[in-house]
Image 1 (cartoon, rainbow, N blue to C red):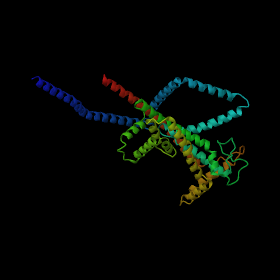
Image 2: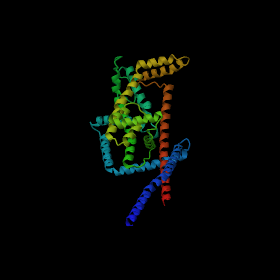
Image 3: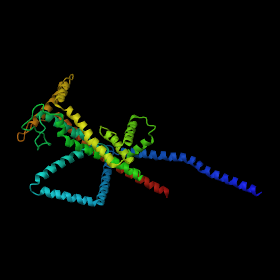
Image 4: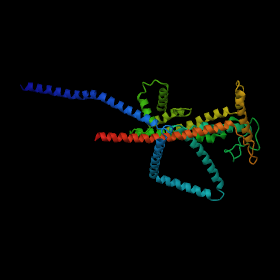
Length: 421
């Protein structure tokens, strides 16, 4: 009798354990549709919020966009002020150095020529580094400073070198104005290397600026990976979605992005160097990838700096110098003139513009420069103005959208807090 009771109790215990094991499985199967439904609701809400933010632009909602832009500017200034206050020791040291330089700058003496030389070089390098940063960081859209500033500068130096027969332009007015040296040079004495050497400093500084501009995506992705927080960046969200759907990617753009990500992740330093050494619109993804996979800072920045400031910059310089060499320009002008019907009418302003530039190169200080206006230079100035204005508008739109995202996040947080109460 006692053995039967023991058997019955063991059977009941086994049945109870089996029921307990099956209970979570049934709950899991029930919760799976609910979890999928919750994820779909969250993704739909994020997509709706993103569409609302993208609609916040100056030409659609100018008053709200400007209002949000000013609020975001105030918040950003407040955050930067707090960061500087936390690093007040470094700020104090910087102010002391600036004060010493200002004292040396204002004091008369034999050191003035060295101070003026340093001032000129520092301002010149800072100018090109700043343009490089603007081209790379963008704040929503990059200002194509190579096409607007560095490319035309290299082209003007190239044309002047072939016209003057020398690159020893008098300083000043170079680089503000290019004037042929009085001694002149032998025709045919200009080499490709001499022009490359003349523009090497500004080109390398511009390339270094573009490398510095690639750091924000790297730091953002690295901080998000280390903290586990959801970053306030849509590019990083797109990157995580791309990694989640890597096996099912079909379109060319996604596969190209995955190719860049795999090269950077697997090859390391030389993969980053290869991506940075060629014109690559997907290089922002390389910065996000390196930050996400915790690539060391100097590995990423060193490869980016070498690739952009040395290798890529020399490739771009060679292209511009060869394109604007004397015989190539003459062939291009003659080719324009050979076009049927409209050729001669288009060729005339180009020839007049080149002739005006040549005459300016031979007008020395005190002789006066010809004040001729050409429609090509007028059009280029207006294109530069339009692109700069568009860049400013894009900054305003981007900052206004950032503030809108802050509002959406705070509203979602309040809603979740009220829901949990």
